[in-house]
Length: 352
Length: 217
Image (cartoon, rainbow over all chains, first blue to last red; front, top):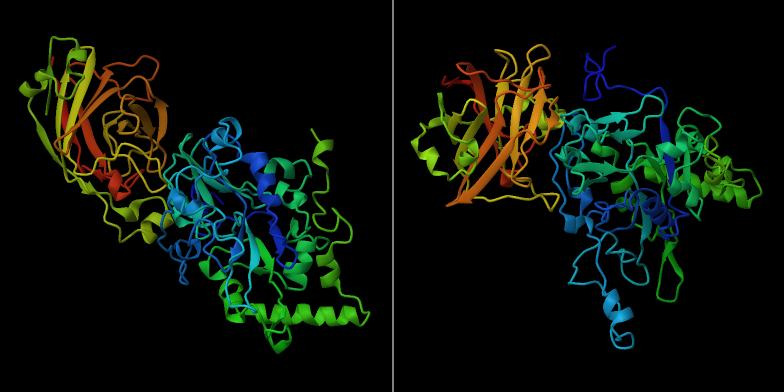
């Protein structure tokens, strides 16, 4: 069947890749260390024009995130499948790359009297509200939410680009912007409900996470996943029964998409965060009620989050009783890298 | 619309405020917003269906040649001066003229596979470098050259005036650009992008009909 420029076949059906790669992020293991962020930055976004780009971010939730208020920025699809208008975030909302007073502190003789600080008076940044969270002492709470391009099965960006410059790869479903075709119109940025697309002002093109496809092609896992000290980023094909991604998403169904209601069918899934019970000022548990409000988690991961959290707690009970739990053993990742990205175990220093 | 023949170096009319332009007849051109339903993007055709596109409703056009070069002057009212895109939300003002590469081409679809078009495109953030675009349908534009079209622009009294200038013939670009001969009657259409209205790409004001220009012998 012939393929049109906008990711659909001539009969209007979405083009489906032969296989689909996915990631599962275990939010119970995310340390908020930003090693994923820095590994991506180091690998891909160091050139001029990319100073403000962070293809992967780790947001503190609840929070306004990156870019600021992305969750209410529109885009994606309405329940009837029609496109929903979105808005373009400003540079400030994404967070500009600050310049610091290095000269003054390090070379101006004021090292003992002047603090190192950003020039100007920034009011926002890519990680401005880190560790703020919500709630009142002693029941304040937050958790970390790593985010990348979701390489969606119904990508709003692909259907937004009037030039057909965005493709979903047939072999693995990775969504890529063709910079030769892109003219920097930013309809994709407007349409992406997760706001994971950046604009390169120097090259006049849009850019985003490429799922480290040049690494994939050498059997090496994406940088963010391989460098994760918490080993919480699982990578695999959704149809590979040996992959932890398959076990968590398909077999045990404990990994959930973020904001499924955006309608783009994301291929990044999350193990929802468990939380300790609420407690009184002396630190005594008050009730069975957990510190992270369920309605908040439902707003992110949908109604199934309750069932999934109950299942995870049940699995922990089983383990304490000495029973086996494939779910927990999968999440623990005893053998790295084969247990977390079995199709991409190669060490990047061993490949050309 | 007559492309008047001037016996001067067209560098003399390269500035929009050059005195020679005052003696050239003006063609007033009405513009409308593009029909968003036709855009090759589900997001634009449905998601942006309620967006009002086509902020500039008329443009004044003049045209001259000197047997080797063709110069086109466009002028329009624009209270919002947008010459850069330094923020994600910023878009520069722009304008273009469109020619069928052959005798005819469908205007509404910016040409077709068998009847392509050639657009001369000026954008306020790169004022001196016009771009020659080849298109064979909506969403297919390709920049084929960024040197052959010389542009100059002026913004004063809340009005843009620009001049686009190119050799009548561009050797080696047959089939990619419109070539001009003296005495030709050539179809031409117009487009203006208002940056402050988020107009870029297919989101623009355009003349829904071709105008004919005659290159005076």
